[in-house]
Image (tube, rainbow, N blue to C red; front, side, top):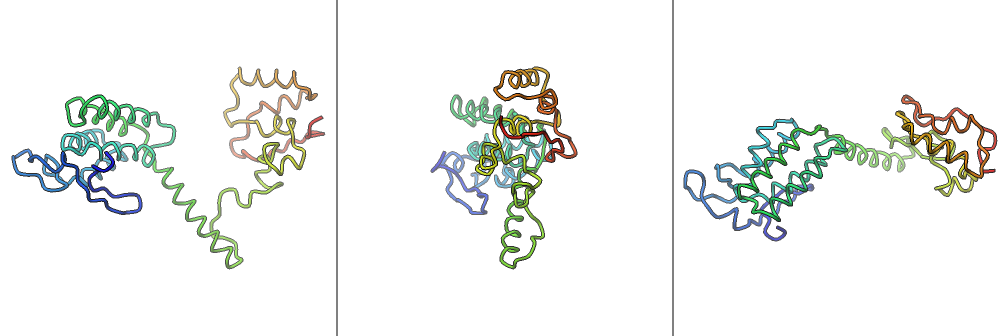
Length: 261
């Protein structure tokens, strides 16, 4: 790939116009010479690539499969795999295992077989179908855009000494604030406050809201029993209690001697 890549739009809107020989040469399905950026079926490959992404986003399996096949058979497999790898991070919900599948299908199609061969085309269809069947979401892209907009609003407000119209979800992130629990022994502020193992076990290591499974909670209780710190029953129980689903950060429980013994 690399130097052989045909024209493609980058995330910044820039356009690279180099065309690889395998995409430029050949004829359409009706025997006419292909124009630059034309697929074997006579389509503009940018249109097909865009259609593929929208099909993945809208979970249209048949259209996604066709678009992948059309790009692969027309000499644009490099573009297809580049796009599919982008789609798994741009248009699918986080945690979808399809990201690993797409990478594996790409390896098979490009390293083991020829990308436009029967096997390469089947890999392209498999990958497109896997993406279309996965849970669609623009959450990561929407989050990135919001955080960038919030950063700009925050910087603008600082110049005018006003409160920002929107802010980061953590605000100023300071000791004593909503996210006070983050300042444990792993941070400079937490160390200055002498928040050692006791604070971490009681507050910083809690999970939720599903909570620890039975085995993990058992190990945590045993670890606390074997610790040099003398934890009482209430402290051990609190350490394995899940955080509240409607209030994950405040911790109303207070114990005498939050610092290490």
